[in-house]
Length: 112
Image 1 (cartoon, rainbow, N blue to C red):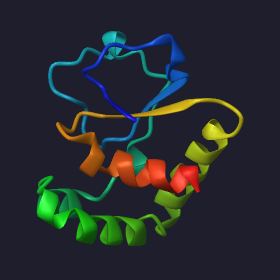
Image 2: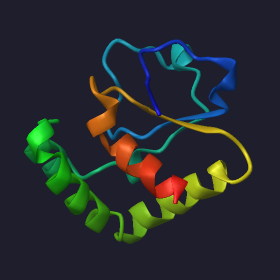
Image 3: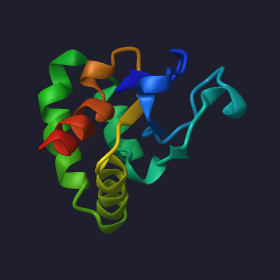
Image 4: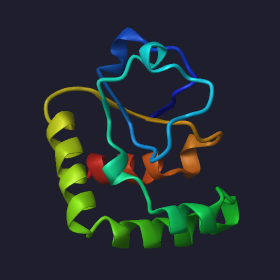
């Protein structure tokens, strides 16, 4: 899990952006992405409610996990599981604090 604003590194393996919105100031060619999985991202409503407030992270995680049961999101999550199977997968986010982002929630799921 890394911020998309950090330079790509060889050990990143597959690089997948998991944000719904394209990050400001990043050119697609400079992102060095393998994929952009916006279907796995939280809903706009959840994202706007959360606003990356640390005190809301536990509740955000609970609500986001419930959203991942949605068929389109579940399919996107299964695809991430396939990508992570047998190779390194780096989840990218534009969030200032990746530790309290959807990328963190997804990383926890993928490690289990």
